[in-house]
Image (cartoon, rainbow, N blue to C red; front, side, top):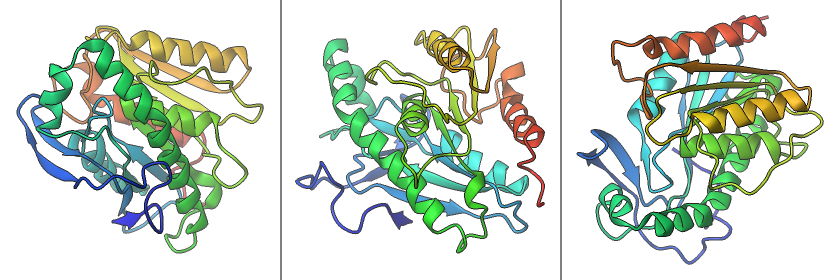
Length: 267
């Protein structure tokens, strides 16, 4: 894993808790929690196209669904010749099993905790983009073909990456997947905003489908490139899990979108 910062992450220098990795019965998947020192884990294809995607798993800013919204996505992209970097961004510090603790909080407390941590997680997304682009030659990447994908809370990180970048960390494209943007302050679509690929399910049990619609409308109103897919069924947090639903093939739609932009070839 590659540390994002040479020392303590700015804004959380006093954090001393230790990262944890375990199977969450409530999420029914492997999770990472208590991230204090954000990192990137590289997944590099044998024959790369020069395109790369930084992946931010979701988990309500309390956990990271590290497999179905991280490592499994990275491996699938590798098979298409795309390099991937799974981001472990800063999370709400927890004292017990993080997912259980999140569900035990009063909704207003959980929302406040998420809003408090979202700027730190967004800063990690921007730093990750800067780092990968700075080391593009090392990873055999085209510096102009590095994008960002995020799921749920990680989708909020993706939106920050798409709207708050500078000259050295602008993503070439952004893919917020069933993004939850309620933790973000109001944002402005930049004049040179990257194209966005948006995807969610209408029956999202957290009611987040509207967030993807709102993002799409914001990009279109700014006359920027946007593509939106809404499945009738799929729920929230499906990632790479198979549910015997059309949403199972969502990542193939993403690959087609990349191919339409010439990002799967090696030219």
